[in-house]
Image 1 (cartoon, rainbow over the protein chains, first blue to last red):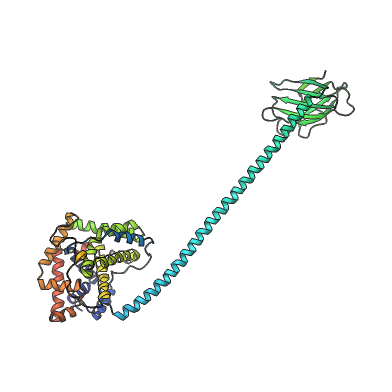
Image 2: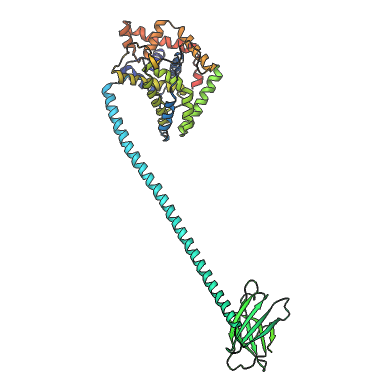
Length: 284
Length: 199
């Protein structure tokens, strides 16, 4: 086919002026991808695309755009082969009916697949939401349990504190008490008291402003009798404010205590003092 | 509108189409707003029923959205693509509605189906460029012999083949083909359709 004839056919094809057989022939021609043919088709289409500009313009209603944007809520297809604009070919009715039936079937299948896909997606999202909820529930339960533990610890601590206060109060009501002041030995500050409950052969030591013992160390109480030999009477430590307390029975066989003293010893205590005296008091 | 402006408009359309192909709904809305009036005018001219035309218009732009990957900007402009698509879908709608394959009887616009303005009015949007383009096309068409213009309109708007036109007008087939082709080439020359814009 000569160039001029090809152009004529292509222009008539673009204008929709060919019969079905000629349409098929031109389509086959264009599928060969000859650059001049494609340029001719593009030129024809650009010319024809301007024809409607001569018509009295009409505006569609705004509802069309609204409907369109609602329909366009799903993204366009992608990764498909680029093809030319649809050909202005004539429709053969049986072909159209068959194509429509096929299209309906495809649309139905696609709809079913899409619904199935959407259902699966919804299920996944639901599962994720449930997992998040379950995680949150577990975390909340963990936090609640932690709060309960803290409250129980505080209750126990408060109960101990209350018991201690009550014990101290009861102690103060004992009729036969003796007090000994403990003085710091070469300490910038710090001191204490020993309350002797002679009737019950118990001592109650209270210290204050005492620095916490070094790591791995504790404070140890010593009773020293007339023979000058220190008898270990128990270990204790102090809190952050420097306060500490120790209740200790008077050892059996020790009828007279001359001195009460406190030293810093390795954890677990020592049988004999291994460091200089921190606090000391003469028992009157 | 200058050649530069035409190229700029075509480039804007290409950019919007690229965004649309990536799933940008705002690009679809922008393309709709740029071309819906022209496309609707064409569809209404073919379908001649406002409600049906709006349905076709919606379908055309939805097809553009769903089949965005089919647009190849090396093959032509967005306007040409939309006009080709809209013309095809509008003729399909008429054939389905009327059960015909050839030219329909001439109809007059009635009631709401009448165009918003007459052919001689300036563009209702007040857009000087659109008015200029419209004037340019009208002048180009007026340069054609009325008989040739009629042949082009029969094939383009009414979907008649050259053989159907030849039979209806009792003209030689070759003469119809030649007149249509020459008419279109004259039109292209008058409109200065530039291949450089397209390729």
